[in-house]
Image 1: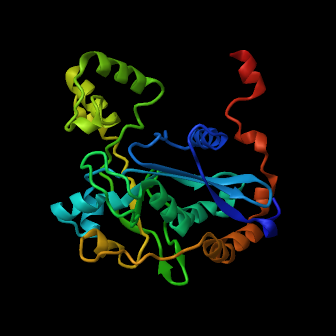
Image 2: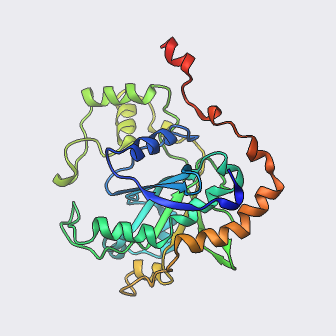
Length: 308
């Protein structure tokens, strides 16, 4: 990697493409299992145009309906939440890959998720389309992105400030509920049991007749086999962050204004600011990134494949 030549660009991931395979492969390296998201989805690669190498990825999906910290931070009442949750997406995966991760490029990926490119992708994909549940056509405004840290406190979103402006805000913590600790084949067994012995919840016909999510599967199986549903609490409080994409984004989500007054951040603007604030100083202080060996990022070696 030639530091002075790095030039990131966003590549939207489409279904059944090599980009999608690459996105899925990178997700396998994450510290906790990454779901494929549900409902609406937008996925992006961050590519270094100078050499065609991958810098990072992020994926946006539908947010959960109930999230106390987020709802209190926005200042939602029940009516506004029901009408405006559509305008939020949640980053179910976001980060950089080596050697770019050593140069704090996870912060760059977080900033690129807020750019005009992403807002326009949301508008192009969902503008003029009826929502699945209500059958309504909403304004294609992406006003807020939320996410949660992988494990405990996050250094990626912390102090993500450019020219005195904080772009990502810490808005609270989760209560420690989740599914990632049901790993190493345990969840697959739980799912198989649920499909045979448990009844799925489908509150509305458009949702279909399956289980809503992993949490429902685990909760129902634990109850049926006589174990406490409290086992679904792993005790790790993940930090919750929000990134408003407009000056009036929160007022818009509360129903107080008709437009979010978007920030108008271009990819070039973000890279220019990030490059001077983080990238070049980090590269000068920490030259170890130059010793990265691509082979070390393999999940399967040739010897492993032969052994299988």
